[in-house]
Length: 428
Ligand SMILES: [Zn+2]
Picture 1: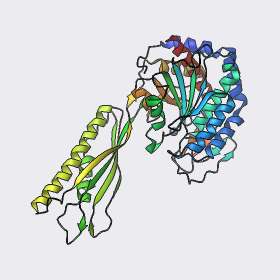
Picture 2 (picture 1 turned 45 degrees about the vertical axis):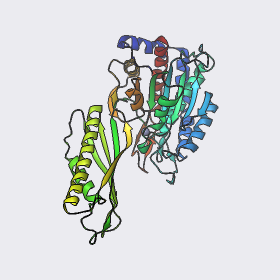
Picture 3 (picture 1 turned 30 degrees about the horizontal axis):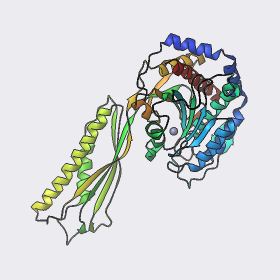
Picture 4 (picture 1 turned 180 degrees about the vertical axis):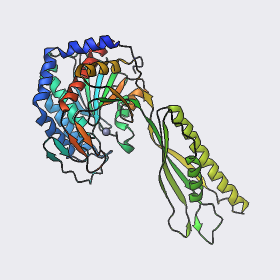
């Protein structure tokens, strides 16, 4: 793993970007982006029409692998996690090199169940479909940037890449996916330890950048007991009573405003009928913070709240004469863990993005979010998540929309940032 992040001064980043933007092949790439808005939108429409719920991305992955091959990427494969990978090789580096690479990725999964009707509707430059922005915009943008690079000569050495660019359409970004696609890349793939910087494309927009990874941890609380009849077995401890008192105590946990930390009691289940002492009760809770310490503190508070509540119920039942088998027990399981981290202010990736934005007349709005970039950032790999251009809204609803107006500008931004980081990686 690459853990050092050499500093790049803003002046040298800016001159690198200006020199890049003046190159003839880069102009050719920009020209491709300008000339092909319809091709890009056609990809987006085809992609959005294929259901891809988290854990059910296979059909969309196959479609994307075909596009990767069609546009001319090398080493196209679908890995063990279901991620789609392709490579744009470097000019003078053998294919079996284990040197640094730059990773450009976009998640292919959506929050919509496979049964969701997907009927993409294009009206002018506005596309209406669940998933149109999040993240069909990112995947289509990624295909566009790579196609532009290939068209400009990235595969025939006219635009010689100094290190390989790996393209990834990853699974498991949304909800219960718990970032499993990108996690697989960093934990189990041949790329682990070789990624010098990682650029994530997620959703629309041109001037933001998520550089602060909001951490989250999710737990399921399960409390179980013998259960029984509400009248004849009265006195047997009640899992719902214990769960309710644990949740009430947890909800009282003080939360700092800075670093911003939140706690949510998300779901509660349990019991089978009003006249039965339940055998079990469960709840799911979600903790979020920019600070890993706070997440740990909340985890401790959760353990204490549940243990205390169960103990209290058991002691009360014992005092009332309940038998030794009339006890509650509990289990806590982690159902989600996204690490908190931050791209350092002096990171070369951030100074390069600022230089690109200055060159294109864009603002560099640094934001906080929970994205695929959480994983590399927590490992010390420079990473950020940026928009793939255009505009969009109503994400995660059936009314989701995307507008391709000004998409080209953001794609130029992604293209310049990628090329500049390839040069930077070669200099390390
Ligand atoms: Zn997304």
